[in-house]
Length: 286
Image (cartoon, rainbow, N blue to C red; front, top):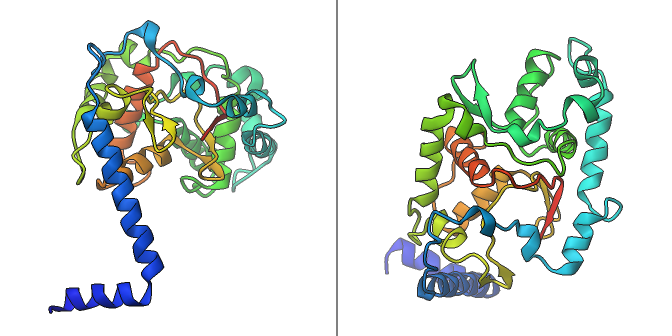
């Protein structure tokens, strides 16, 4: 018996419950993959869901979860929006500047902004997402420390800004800006590429098997209409990049760092797929 085998034996002996749960999770994942791969692919779905057949994840949720999103007094994401509103008015950084000092009333100045991201950033020569734009403003204009990805501060400001676009159509930014075309194609390739130990792609679930049940929930088409979202499983707020990382972990694939170009390109492609669909932020998801 080699060292690895002895360690595994000792682990099972010392933590039998933990090992049982780990094995059960592995079996559930394997069963889920088998379910996906055994289902026949809908004709015409792969990579090409007709515009009139696109569905927000909202439409696939249970009535109680939809009701939670619809009612601002019941939607937990409202707490982050309110925090973001306070941060918007607060003077910060060495510059002693507030967001409102430059942008004024967010209901007017930020209306439609979230529907246009990711957008091309001239200084970096590539697209950036809304979170990165907020970080850049904090650092360059307010001369404040950069808020960390998934921090309460950044999620609150993002939720507040995104809330101003609720109900507005996601714009076809990538289709109109030629500078974004190579990044759009990079995101498309990432969406369709099989990866990880399970050899799955985003398209396997969200194009080929949307609407079918997986782990008790309907598989969505993967449209980023509600971000940042309050996810019941997380019991907290999270960005689209957090959700993408979760998906990659589920495929047993290597994840990227938050803010990486790979995620932003994929976000750009997802926004293009969702063009014309209404912004729902802050969304609620199972």
